[in-house]
Length: 259
Image (cartoon, rainbow, N blue to C red; front, side):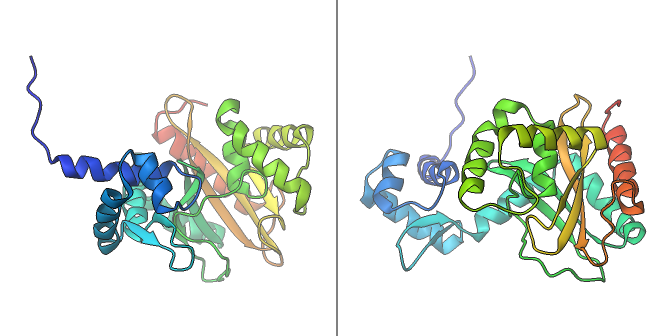
């Protein structure tokens, strides 16, 4: 018979608030957050005051809604970055950038979709509105397209449905608008062994994303290269694309994947 380890109950209770925020689709009012965590608003507020001091929670002064704070992001990124695939990729990305000559990034599948966990800018600086922890859309980004092509269909179906609905009201250039178009795009990704986006997510920016697989054949990482269309060769067989594919294949092999 195993003895139950002694713990700090208040920490476990307080964590339910953080867990509720992580599961929510957006910021929550105090009453909704408390209800999701199964506690009274007064009790939840006391925990939230402490979490705000620690940076784990932030409150919008205009709407008074609560969301995860910067410290929560740092913890999440630290956890993601310790995945072996990310560690190995980060060790190699510097030399790869020298070969490719463009900004590189790494992404993994997070709670809400493909998430940027590392970013290394080329001397030819590309000013883009991306940050560590940003979640990439499935339809308009090379990163999202790559993960969508290799993820189980049921895992991405809700996200695809949301983005297709948005595409119907606010269409992006060079982006499919129907399920048939999405399937054709994903088939092209698999045929080419990588994804490409041109002038869709960010104006005048093109990018590639190559998949990295583990020993079980699951895509665990996306290796991304991007740059301004004026200087970025976006042909499927351009030197940057070939170098990115090769680097992803080598990393996959090192993780035990057999093509």
